[in-house]
Image 1: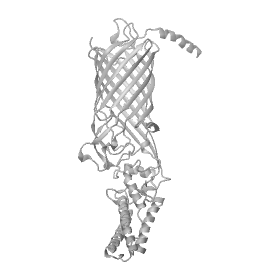
Image 2: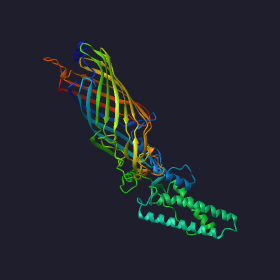
Image 3: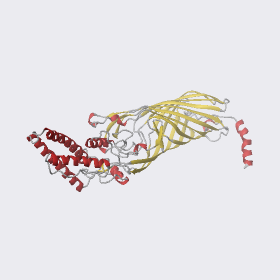
Image 4: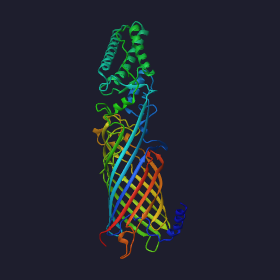
Length: 526
């Protein structure tokens, strides 16, 4: 072991004494040369940042008190149950939903670039992408007060639907009888009794309408109700029995003695999973387990204009080089499926136009590449379930056409390097990216959903900082060789690893990214 160490140390001065050729691969390709690229990238993340706080990648799918915070369609249920209870701030609790997930993205890219002149290069990149989201959801309903609505028009069972019909028929008959007695002057001779009758008529009508809406309304019935055994359920039953007692024993309106139909038990994991994926249910989504897609990604075409190229000229190490790149990103990838709540797709589904600059600066063994760019993401028609980013469980009935104007992206980066030997260097990486706020609107007035703004879908501005490092090899390409002289492998290669260390604003995925790239050249003309 010591012999190998001494041998390695003895080689260091020799390596450092050798000539140092071009260490940063040019952005463009030499005139008359066709450059081929094979790139691979693997990204993985199980955490993300939101408002500077680290949380699980699928944090939006979980909650310590799972309810309308994640299921926006339960807000009406909360309001109506609160009306029955006289509690304005009531919120149905389905339990503690624990959500853990991991996102992986593997990308293999085949690219080619053709040097038209010494300054102009045309290029195309064709990516093939595999995305995979794995989810692990666990619902602990120990502290819950809600479960499945057994009398729901489509999700319930016939016997409970019949019980609910009997309850509301008796309720309606009692209120109708009370109203007839009020109108006929039955209580007119007793002001106290008259006041009680009017109050019970108003309170009873409000309770009947609220319970009927959340229990059995064809369009507004809630899939979840308080359980009969919960404190909330017992308060509802007590409130109805109080009405019944006053109707029968104070106002002389008999015949209404049944209890409202409530959830029989607390919601379970299996019941919630079935609710999400039931094709006949209001959500009608894919099962929440795993989403995996392998398809072509979004293809890039563009051009590079090398304005200055005085970097690593013959006999001189270092110098300066500056190039401008323009690209158009085509929507050739597969968009995310709105029926799959975990899907991230393999492409953005829109045209994007970008411009960036690359500056190489160096002297001797030290140098750096600086980059900066702006990506304009054009608006596009999307089919989405209308819900806020933090409430992913949207009903199928919220599916509509929207015009999505995704926020543009600004990027700044630096890659300092140190040359270890003739063709090899190690480098660091710092990359800052800011994505502006999205803007979403309905595609047409006919697509609008009453009471919901299309801009619910918009993500706010977010920024990310990633750091890392790697190693690069830049050999002399075949077209650079002088006749009769060896020039080594005509390839360029690099490996790097970066990780997101900080995020600001909206949702920033904490990606860990490994990249590998190999390039080689073929002389076409001189």
